[in-house]
Image (tube, rainbow, N blue to C red; front, side):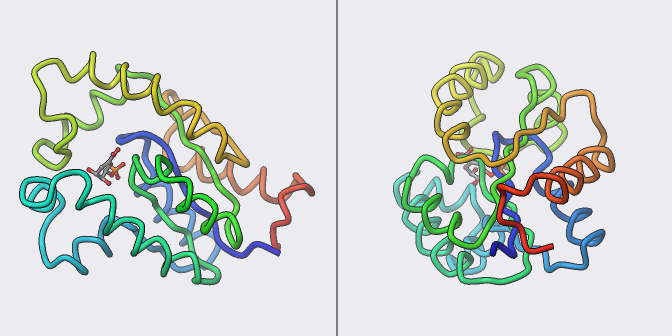
Length: 178
Ligand code: S3P
C-alpha cells in the first residue's frame, strides 16, 4: 500500500502550492525536495547551480530523494527535473502515488515570472522557447512516471487538490492506502 503522494511536473505547475493544500486536506506531512536540498547544501538553489553546476545539483537531488522515499504519509513536492534520473522515480514509486501536474508553456512562463531569480535553468534570453524545448524533452519522462495526470492551466489550486483526492479515492489500481 502506498501512503505518500509525490507531485512531479515542470517548474511553475503548482507542485508546492497544490502539495501544501493537499497535505492540509488529507492531514499529511508536506515535504519539498528542493528545500531539503538547500538545507543539506547550506546554499540556495541558484548558488548550488552556480558553484557546482547542474550535475552537482542532481547529485544532491538523488541523495535527498533517497531519504525522502522512506517517508510515510507525506505529500512530496519534487523539483521539475527530478524525473530525469530514473533512480529517483523508482525509489519514490515504492511508497508513493505519482501525480503529474501539467500546464501550457504560456501559463508556465506567467507563473514563473512572478518568482524571478529562483530558477537558474530559465535565466535565458528567450524563456518561452526554452520552456517549450524543455517540456518537449521532458514530457516522456513525466508521462512514464505518472500514475495520475492533471492539467492545471485553467484550474486553481483548490480544484487541482480536489481532483487529485477524487482520483486517489476512485482508482483502485493505484494501491492507495485510504
Ligand atoms: C528544476 C526545477 C526546480 C529546481 C531546480 C531545477 C528543473 O524546482 O529543482 O531549479 O530542472 O526543472 P521547481 O520545479 O520546484 O521549480
